[in-house]
Figure 1 (cartoon, helix red, strand yellow):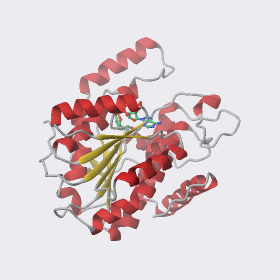
Figure 2 (cartoon, helix red, strand yellow):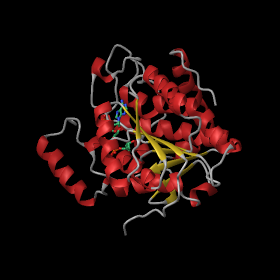
Figure 3 (cartoon, helix red, strand yellow):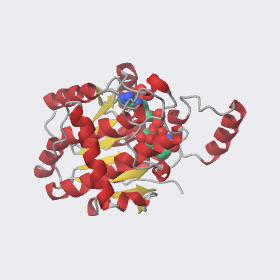
Figure 4 (cartoon, helix red, strand yellow):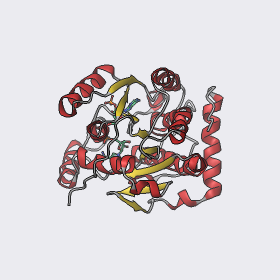
Length: 312
Ligand SMILES: NC(=O)c1ccc[n+]([C@@H]2O[C@H](COP(=O)([O-])OP(=O)(O)OC[C@H]3O[C@@H](n4cnc5c(N)ncnc54)[C@H](OP(=O)(O)O)[C@@H]3O)[C@@H](O)[C@H]2O)c1
C-alpha cells in the first residue's frame, strides 16, 4: 500500500532540507514546496542544487532557494548558518536528510577537520547545524503561523541496529583502525539518533519537536557511489534482489514529510518513525540514559576541541 501525506498549507513557513538536491531529499523538498513552504536546499554542489531547484519550480511553481554547505567542514556549516540568518529569522522545518557511506581507508577516510567522513557528515556536522539553527526554530515556536509546531526531522536508518556507541575510530589516529563500511555507517546513524533523542528532551519545553525517521530501502545514489570491496557479480546480484523490494525516492521521502507537516506528529517528540507510524528504534542502546549522556558529552567535546560550541 503506497504511503501518502495529507497536504497542509505551508505558505509563510520556512524549511531547510540538507542533501535536498538528490534522492529522498529532493522528493522531500518537492513535497514541501508543493505545499507552499519557502524551502532552502542545503547542498555541497551549487550546480546540482540549482538544477534541482529549477526542476522543482517547473513541477510546483514554487522555486526553492539554494544554500551552499559541505558537511565535511564545520567552517562550511557555520558559513551556511550565517548566510541563512542574513535572509531568514525563523525555521519551521529542518530536515537533516544528507547522508554518506564511505568506503575510504587510510588518510582518505578523514575530513580536513581530522574526523572520519561518515561521522562528520552523518552526525557531527548536522548536530552542529541543528544547534546553530535552534534559535530560529525557537523563534518560530514563539511566533507560530497557523498553529504550526516547528520541528527537526532526522533522516535516520535501521542501519543503527548494527551501530555501536564507539567514538574511538572517529579521530585520525595515523593508522587505519576503521570498522567495516556498513558498521561505520551504522555507528554514525546510531550516533545522531542518540543525540537527537536527547535533543528532543532538551527543546521540548521550548516548543520544538524532534523526530527520527527510517525511510525504508530506496535504491538511490547512497548505495551506488562506492566500490564496496565485494566481487562485482555479488554486488550486482545483491543490487538486483534489493531493487525488487526498493521504494521509490518519493515513497522513501513520505515518512520525512509526514513527520515534517502532519498534525499527528505534533503529539509526540523524540520518537522513531517508519511508514508514517511510530516504531521501535532497532538498537536498545538508545534507551540507556547514562550511555546517551556520555555520548552527547563526547560529541560536544569533539566539536569544542575544534572551536565550535553546542549551544541549545
Ligand atoms: N536509500 C536508502 O535505502 C536509505 C535507507 C535508510 C536511510 N537512508 C538515509 O536517507 C538519507 C538520504 O539518502 P538517499 O538515499 O537519498 O541518498 P543520496 O541519493 O545519496 O543523497 C544523499 C544526499 O546527501 C548529500 N551529501 C552527501 N555528503 C554530503 C556533504 N559532505 N555535504 C553536503 N551534502 C552531502 C548528497 O549530496 P551530493 O548529491 O552532492 O552527493 C545528497 O544530496 C541519508 O541520510 C541516508 O542515510 C537511506
